[in-house]
Length: 265
Length: 282
Ligand SMILES: Nc1ncnc2c1ncn2[C@@H]1O[C@H](COP(=O)(O)OP(=O)(O)O)[C@@H](O)[C@H]1O
Ligand SMILES: [Mg+2]
Image 1 (cartoon, chains in turn blue, green):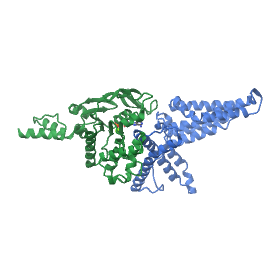
Image 2: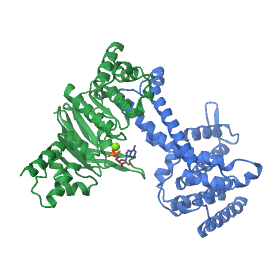
Image 3: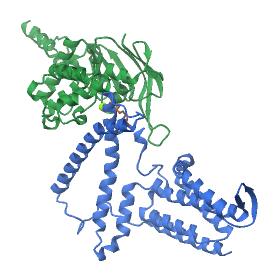
Image 4: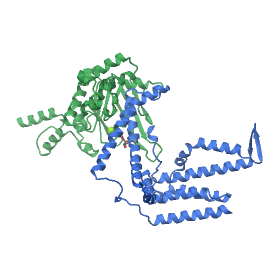
């Protein structure tokens, strides 16, 4: 169903991670990604994987739901794994036709897969526990220093949040329009390409008409509430760090230190 | 018997955090040629229910029989079904897309595989039936007024010559005149073609004046399936589930409460008028 194309994958389980300031989660994701690439030995893997399991557990997001996100990149993963497996020179383990798998190849591949899965799950924890709008808020705040260089931080954030709030509305509308045209006998499953493209016109025209209508309404509504850009604008819910956010930062720094130390061993 | 809804259940976003049971174990029958009203507060599952009737939504359990055949069978022709069971969505004018009204109305019959000529013939008939004048046929649908747009959209479904016409809140967002016109139009369509009508509404007055039988939905369940007079006699229960009784009936209930000897089982304007006149003559 078209409804399944949800943006982001926010899962409202109400865990402690959901209640953290979104900036902590953005920084946390960044720190986690960095931590994945700064160690060499086996102990590093234990540290990063243990931390990941810890995060998954406190996020209260069902694991089955979480690995759904992995499915989309499985082809990419298999492809890179195969290349690594066959292309890494070293002590041969066994040979198929002209392709040789080496001991080093297996090791490199295993490490790469663990890193890749950790990378994806680690960043997903952020998107599972943060709504797209919170994320935009956090990015706006984190990038605010760029304003000195006349970089339009607020405007970009505003565009992002408008786009984000429009997407689910348009997806729902698309769903209704498609069903309404199906009720008039439209066939979107035809195998022939030209037929398929033609069948889109009765869907795209109403969708664009409605998108323009909504955009126009929104512009009017913003105008009538005297919106004129970011200067001097305050927030209804400004981002404020609380005690738990500071704690979270400390845990993150501690984690990073541990990975650095263990990575040296 | 035309349509049998058998223990139908529909769940949105199954197995996710957003799971919603929109229709829960609903069974009823739609007889040939009747004018059936479906009442229910917003979110009670009316729209979901009717979208299963022409297989736009596939139920999670239960099924629908059209002329004795299970419409969710693999080899049941869904396109033919959608021609037979015409569904007019809420705000149907948002689905107009052609450069002129006439071509837009041809879209349905052409999808059913009719020749250009036959499709045009049907479009002509349908537009005439909803009251379009010849000179308005080639206007852009985007230039019409709200009420006219809606009539054009209804013609788009009528042109498929359905045997059952389902309308999802066809009077939503219209002014009193537009609302009256649409309700009169539905009556006229029924008189001239004899098709079965399913009117989804949350207006007590609309269904009281027109429907012969009422289905009442509350929180995904079917709570009443009876004649309008019988349904509205449960006025306390109706209030409880976020609905009400027709305004004219409220007048009688209030008179009764103040001790006047009136019969309260009258729900249309005319019947209530006669009842009050009878009271005055005594
Ligand atoms: N496309 C959808 N995805 C998820 N939930 C939906 C969708 N459409 C409707 N619902 C939910 O299903 C329930 C019934 O909705 P609906 O059938 O539209 O009721 P009604 O037409 O009586 O207002 C509501 O709780 C609504 O939020
Ligand atoms: Mg509805």
